[in-house]
Length: 279
Length: 221
Image 1 (cartoon, each protein chain N blue to C red):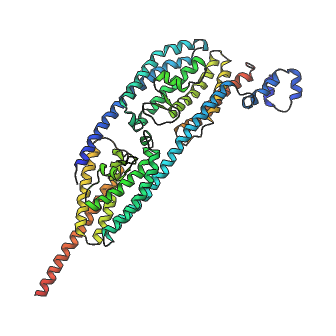
Image 2 (image 1 turned 60 degrees about the vertical axis):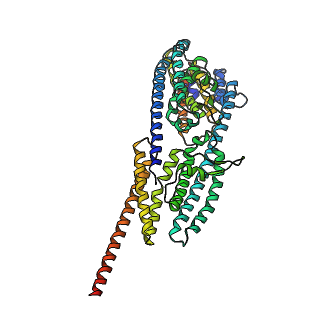
Image 3 (image 1 turned 90 degrees about the horizontal axis):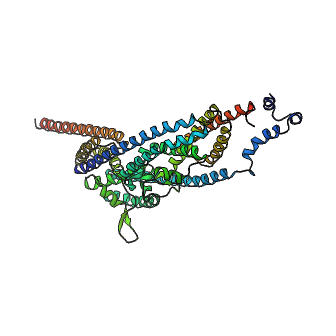
């Protein structure tokens, strides 16, 4: 009865209540602030706080490192996209060499970024932060994959990717700056069809039939290869990229088809025209 | 262009999915043991504090099995690929960890340290978040295991009253609020741990309500 009175008006009537039962009231009043007061930190609480302070430091270090990987990966993505755009200008330039030289300059800058990110991806951290690093890496593989396709008309291999990522270490031996997982590689090359299709459309504009044929062959082989992979284990996000591959292949086939029709039309037209002239 | 590249990759992916199957099986075993242990440990809610020793003693064989389960799992993982597959077992390890944390609280009314976890589960907690060269229990897994304790504590506070132990909620409350103060030191990102951390306050509230009920009736000082 008394206690419930106390709770209904806890702050005001301290004088009247203290008379009736002095020992109880101070206890109740003291109890709340005691938990938070600084002077009375118990041994167990201090231990908990010390432990959790050290956990906080480790967690912070982890989050910071993760952030750094994300930022650097984003920079790699941006620069790799620039390489892709430079390379696609190949149909506009008189000589492919100018395009490759320009790409080579940008490639040096990307390697600087990879030097930066490699610090964060040593040892077990390589896979720990793979999910943060992989977007940049995939975009990079796409860029140098397009490069290799334009230069040699072949699909870049994983070893070639690692070669491009290699710089001399302290002993002068070429070593890759970061490791590339099979998933990184697969997802990187499955971005290629979109770019190859863009190049193909540009080539049609220029009337470069040979290039269009090369693109179509390449895309068909990519499709065949990726289909093989789809039968085996799951690769995260591969499904989405396969959809893009399919549409790129279809677009390229359509473009090739229109080009063929136009050509045969032109040749029959010019043939009939020449017949008309003859007559 | 050579399709051989894809054939080789396919081989690797096939090997990987076999490994994933093995890991899954090992994790299922681990879960099975966790469920059994959890059922046995839940008896602690129904008995007075004086009898909890029997409950925690009875669960010792399950901890032995847990350790074996985890060691089987760890045997499948090459240390370099630890983080590649880590997502697969992180929940199972958290469950195992929360059992240790609860058992140690029941035994000695204290927080299980990383050393305790290692002693019970056989693997080190990577509290420094360092580069690893062996199977470890991550700091996040350890912290998640502790979060589960709050839930048990709020239940325990209610059940202590049921078995007529009206002093125990006070002990539980002090312990829980000290631990909660620890958690509040952490800078959490918007991740799983953060979401679970956010639920702690409801458990704290439940424990406080028990104390309130007792105090308002003058049952405790």
